[in-house]
Amino acid sequence: MIVHKVKVYPSKIHLPKKNQLAWKIAEVASDNAKLNKDAIDMVINRIIDNASVAIASLNRKPVVSSREMALKHSRKNGATLFGVNKKLKFDCEWAAWSNGTAVRELDFHDTFLAADYSHPGDNIPPLISVAQQNKKNGLDLLRGIITAYEVQVNLVKGICLHKHKVDHIAHLGPSVAAGIGSMLRLNTETIYQAVQQALHTTISTRQSRKGEISSWKAYAPAHAGKLAIEAVDRVMRGEGAPSPIYEGEDSVIARILDGKKALYKVPLPKKGETKKAILETYTKEYSAEYQSQALIDLAKKLKKKVQNLSLIKKIDIYTSHHTHYVIGTGANDPQKMDPNASRETLDHSIMYIFAVALEDGNWHHIKSYTKSRASKKTTIKIWRSIKTHEDKKWTKKYHNPDPRKKAFGAKVVITLKNGKKISEQQDIADAHPYGSRPFKRKNYINKFLTLTENLLNKKESDRFLKVVQNLKKLKSGQLDKLNIEVKKNKLKRNLKKGIF
Image 1 (cartoon, rainbow, N blue to C red):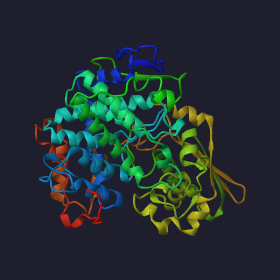
Image 2: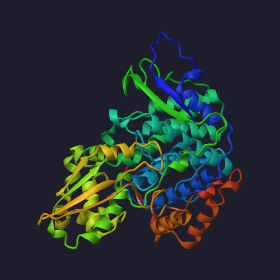
Image 3: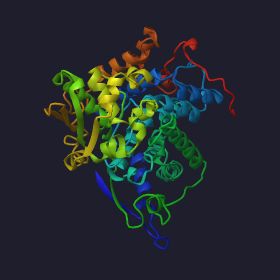
Image 4: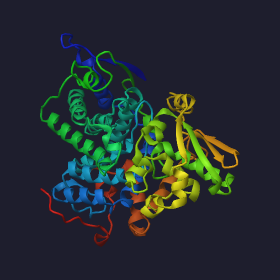
């Protein structure tokens, strides 16, 4: 790996393309490095993971709406839509929009946390849709996805967006553009321009994840993927981009991030180096914000130690800066303590999540978020007794550059009414690659079977699992087999009139 220093230059100083971060990303995307076997296996795991959560969310309102929009953009040799007959094809950017929303809706797919946040699986829907429309083969798709993960993970390691309340899809636009460029085997110049355009058009604020969190949280990464596809299309036609997008005097860094005196360090593989960043990412066992995964495991363990939950006086959670200020009481969001809050908001409240997991000794992607569940009096009592605190030791663990030492957990201290304290701590989720029972292929398949039960018949389920595990051997024009169909009468519709 090479660590690239990225800073702002005044317009009077000409910064050669080859010294710009966007060019270095493009070089990574346009090289022909050998694909790593473990990375290939992990891509297959994540395609299964994405399919699990997408099918489970097919009839949720944002997904239904996104699908209705995509259905209005049919194309003879286009891409497929989750749930819809694979013989029907649609413009790839609209397929990416609908499928990306389905993948993101339940907040239940993979994650990578470092200087910033990310769900790298968001790269997969736009790449599959472009691959289908362009008649790519399985190896082409694998190459593109591995590249997209590499770029996003390393941008997340080097550049913090959250500090400036910029949504993390600003790293997704460039990674999708780079992945598509790699998959289509575009030259470095074309990918360079696409990365810059994609970044320029995907800057948005984190209000989508603050206060009353709406369905836009599900749409945001799908929107970034759609914009990245359009950026690649434009530059393939010879168009350019704002440049240098990272280092310019009025660039993203200068005007939106750390400013003109900023210095970022972004690691990227050297030319020809095998891309393995996907192996540093991790999926979710529970449908909740990733920083809550270890805390759900903790709550399940503490339930066995606290026999009578009515005796709880208060609960203190000592954790990292990110967990405290984003999903904890440090966010100062009253909505995070409101039983009438949206599912999206409850998903970003560690107080709610911990209270329910402690009471139920489990977590369910639907039952744990229902209005009746959130309004339960005993839950509200525990919920409102919880306070989070930043502990610098946990913040340091969170940012540890060693994947084996990086931690997203907490220490929980439960104080009973008689003054007795019960405490427990956990660094990482049990399902984390370095956890007590890391997710393997069989776990991804089990997650798929669990989430798609009652939605898929066994024949279609078995067919998809067989095809995806044979991805490496799929030939040009066969990638539509990755689509999953459900019976037409099982797909909800939104017949409200729109523009399309």
